[in-house]
Length: 135
Image 1: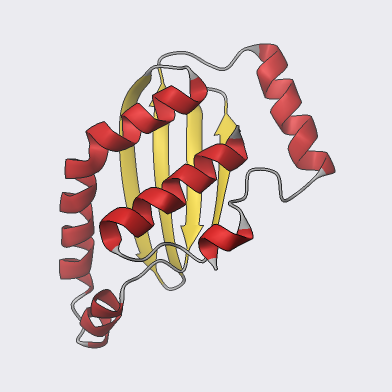
Image 2: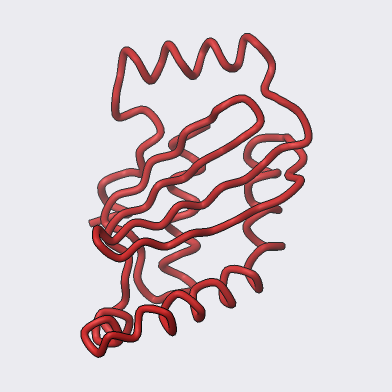
């Protein structure tokens, strides 16, 4: 499920931004889903950062993510079968990282938490997007 979430988020980024992250990985923690995406700045955003316009890049990204909320929360609800209460996105520039944070209406079932934790401990790449999507 975590890999599916990462893959779907990468596809959405590529479709709507024209470029997706070079790495993406999803983490489930109680009633939170956190998707960490690295290397997704567009060339225009990189140029704006060179012009010392980080606030404008951040403002555009936040406005865009606000408009994307319904699409992204619906996608997450479809994959997880859980109701999303709220969603927030945050971009960092050094390093180039985007955090997508979804809060569900209730914590994951205990067996789901255990399965995810055991999987991530035994296979650190669990939840990562497929290489062909991020390459």
